[in-house]
Length: 511
Image 1 (cartoon, one colour):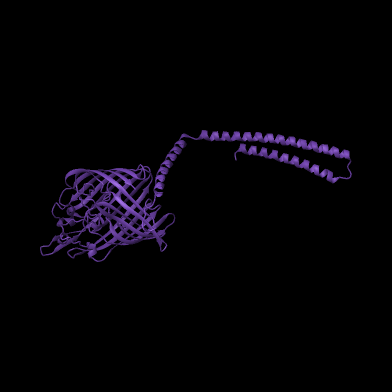
Image 2 (tube, one colour):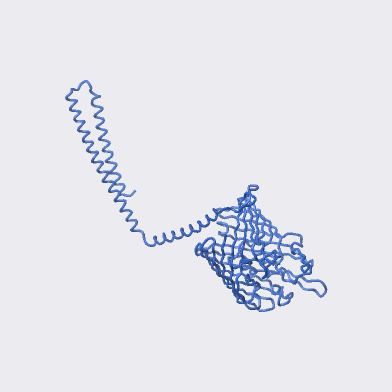
């Protein structure tokens, strides 16, 4: 309580106390006098005392009226003091505080707009299914425009540069459709599942093999899991658990950004478990392990007689008759997918080639996602190993071979190394900037003795690098626009490094 307020309160309290004291004295005189001497006092004396009592009550009433007037005056003074204090605080508020308040109000309005659209989405009717559990359709209708300054392997989703002239065009084949489902609780765990498809298939792709022809519906990814508080048991057709991060792009969706340039992106069947161990604060250790059925890399060799006859051969990992294994240990802090994450992993996958030669895929990885001040995030991953073509590395291949003069074939599993890094800045809830670089390569000394026809671009590729930068603008939760620039450097083993630029634009509607 301020000093003026305390002073007013003391005056008011004293006035009320004096009034109560006078009333009490008058009442005491009125009651005590006739009761104390009822027999001994004469009528004249009684009348005199009654008159005295009447005068006392009259004086008390006058005092009460004066106190009431004083209280009214005090109330008026107190109101005036309050107004003066309010005017003083308003006068001492500086301009910077006003600007900060305006910025905060604008930020709240922006967040409120996004939340209102999200709430409207949740209020829509659920998709009907035979089960009583909710099923949600989702997707991204995506229109891509591209300008390639030189010839590339795939005009709308390029990964390497090859000799030839450029191209310009539009594509909607990178549109993605999805279904998300939540099921019953089982063993006190929440069940869930989802799948994603696009229109970039060519009839036979297990690890992201693509072609320029057609627009066949392609099975991209799928997940099913039982989630406890700190444990999750899952099946997935997705990127390996060793590469949980991916660069951000709206123009590279069919083949994720920096695919075949350091991003181990390909989608393989896996069954595994994730266990979190809580640490002080919001941090936790994460332990993951899984078995994996690694698919073959893209077809870089001539079609085999079996393929020409329409026979589907098993993958080289399946021909070994043993699944691959992978594991990852990470430190996670803060909110999932947006906090600090640093992890290391390893894998081992046995293979057997069509010629009967046995070899193995193995590798060690490191991944990171580090939030920085100013809404900036630094993320990426690195790897080193052997025969990583089925995971999206190793210059499109696991091994090379040549015919031996003594009969049969000579095989060589290729070492692989690479990685990528990205800086992201979220300037606001709607605007995002991303800059990234990735590289993937196999040793030229291992590849050179087996290099074939110069037209076999994937087979002869020893290194591939990509630099990229993009801007993504989301005027609403559903609508998004993006422009992107990519610079690709592809190095065949016997030729000079070829370079090309890709300028892409994208318009997407998410539902």
